[in-house]
Image 1 (tube, rainbow, N blue to C red):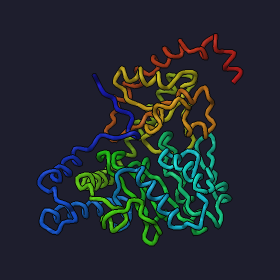
Image 2: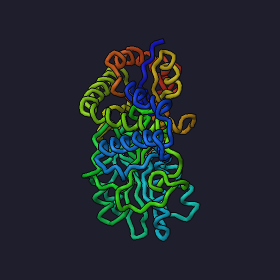
Image 3: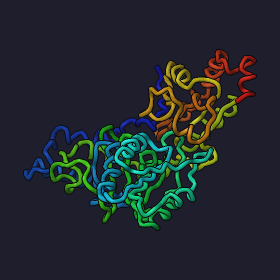
Image 4: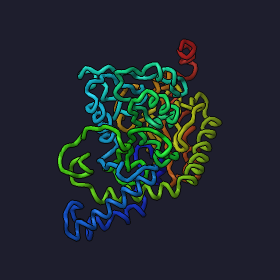
Length: 394
């Protein structure tokens, strides 16, 4: 069966050059990078090069890069590391639309006695900077705001956010998992203190992530063990995957300009085609800055899960939102925060492209999607003549 993969915000295919770069570290260069012998030195050299590649990708210094297992670990390490470094401050600020890696920490923090402010968003998914400014107090230990939303692709104005937060001398963390490799990031100009991202979102393998810690930022280690990562994250380094991430960052930097243009063209082609062919569709974040690869649509009066299953029968891979919340019957917390009507939120689909996505794949989706939506609406109790009264009521 033909495979049309449009779920790249969930994970990406590993670039063949990345596979080639990491392969020797499973065989010839398998030493422990902490060992003093020749085999260890080869592994250590691979880690050091990768650290430089990641640092250059971010506009950072190599000693500000900490390798982790994934974006979730990086988020946890950033948040708990800062909160533990400032035990007398008991206020944490984030947003209502964060990834579960951040959002699901809120109940735990509240049980520990923290006061948590969850900033709202408007109908297009934009933050109110005045609400952010008003939320900050002398007791605020950390602000954690994602760079780009994983469901809608909406990009938050991180430079302006940083100006507001840093003017109060408060540490700022951003989850950049969905931004890295899709929009330019230059930490030499962007004054965030902590930034996290995950390798498998930009064509590296699953199981490797990064925590950027700006020089001078106080952080209590999240994973205590040996001396690895300069004592900031214990555990033997995952050398092949670290090497893979370094290569993926190098390639992402090389392709960034052309990838942005190409993905944006295809995303817009897909969006325009959907709006022209299918009625009663809401494009989430349509009037906000978005990552070039992400299109989140709500098809009113049908279930997104049914739509995904029928797309899958044709070999089309998409998502109803975050892969980390799949299986939930509740509408997306992101769409609820944006005020998307209930009749639409349940019919949400996220198409997310990569630099490997082709025009033919987009056209294949446009060829089959309208018929699938029409088929599902034909059996929906909220569509057609029977659903007219309901639609008027809501």
